[in-house]
Length: 321
Image (cartoon, rainbow, N blue to C red):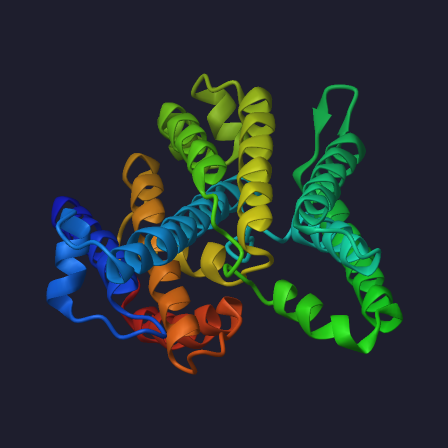
């Protein structure tokens, strides 16, 4: 498939996912009124629902999905591991420990976000300090350290769930499976997405060389160590921003880069922007389904990403080269 055609299709998917998110919800609004609200000609309740409820959540879902997809693509080339995803280094586990600890203490939403951010950044720092010694960067030690910390954070999460009062367990589980219902301020995530996209595109050519292996990259004149450190922190901070916004939403960072590579997109100058479009559109559609299928009850969006993503990837696998 020509890359320009695929890029145009993904742009249409992204725009369509935002419109679908504005169209569907627990309150039924006719298509004409949604168009009117988007054009600014519909005031009243319909306009408030579209502009104050649905579009901010769609913007949050799109930014979160784009961050996870791009972080997944960066970590896969950094670790040279097709199974790598944004949570393989324990970042999600650290955020979960911080957020659930704040919930258990009865803290509010701001403190919970601070706890999640602190936990994620603590894991990022620990993994880096244990993997980077005397100017030596060991990718295998990095991966092993992340996996070990993820397992330890998983044990702490289980302990916190055991100690939590019964009334609070459902909210904790909901956050662990992904929850965008409280994501009404997506601007910080969009700033993080813009920064991640700019950095990724700036080093896309070097990432193509790094994918051949560090030895070949050094032979071809790439400063491998600074590039690896930069990719690690860029992907980690992008993952932390996504976790702060929507909780632990799995499968997006693993599915989206693989799906695009199976379609023949391997050049990171094309792969990274396409990951942002496909990841953002995919998560926006999944979140729309999560808040619509059993309305007014909402489903964890992480469950929907897996239920939607698994059959899509299985359909693409036989066609991959």
